[in-house]
Amino acid sequence: MDTRDVLTSVGEGRDLTVGELVHRWWRPLTVVLVLTAAVVWRLVAPELGAPPNLEIATAATFLAVLLLRNRWAAVVPFAVVAVSDAVLGNTQIMWFTWSAWAVVGLGAILARNLRGPGRYAAALGVGVGGSLWFFAWTNFGVWLMDGMYPATLDGLIASYVAGLPFLRTMLLGNLVLVPLAAVVASLVERAEVAVVAAPMTVKG
Image (tube, rainbow, N blue to C red; front, side, top):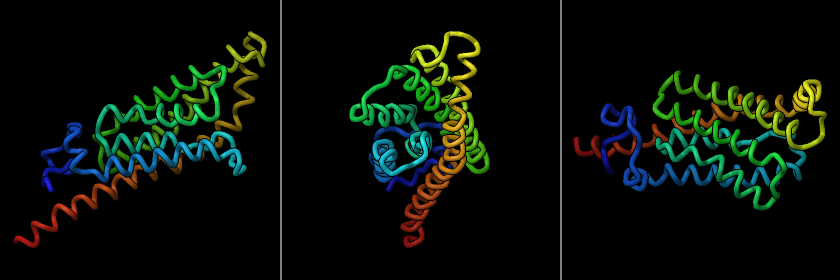
């Protein structure tokens, strides 16, 4: 195994290359498994009686960014929404939903080089900030395009008030799930260090 690792001084501050990700196949594999779980959850959550807007796409995006250490990890929320929307069908505010996830993905990639307390602070920031942004932007889209509310300031306020229960669920979920994603990423990285260090210990 390549002894260079993102936790060492050699790897700090740079993205992982495709070759390095192929070499560390467990990183993309973990991301694929979590991505699959996010898609399945979005499809079955209503049938299970889960609270509306309890989603794991934000956490999956954060985990993908930390493990893949690549800007392309920002497409994870698009993959979740695209695959599940192909089954569920699109809504009138699709472009608001998709663009909201785009901002969440872009925000997450800013944290890809963080370690220690900074990583967990970023996890909370992405969880809270992503939830608030998603709420603000998509409810604006509902007011603008759905026809449920009058095209007035009062109608916009009514749209936001109606969306507060959904915000609460999404916010509470992301306050737990996004930091949990940071924990998973740290565990994977520690396992890498142990695997890399083992041959060196035997040789020593």
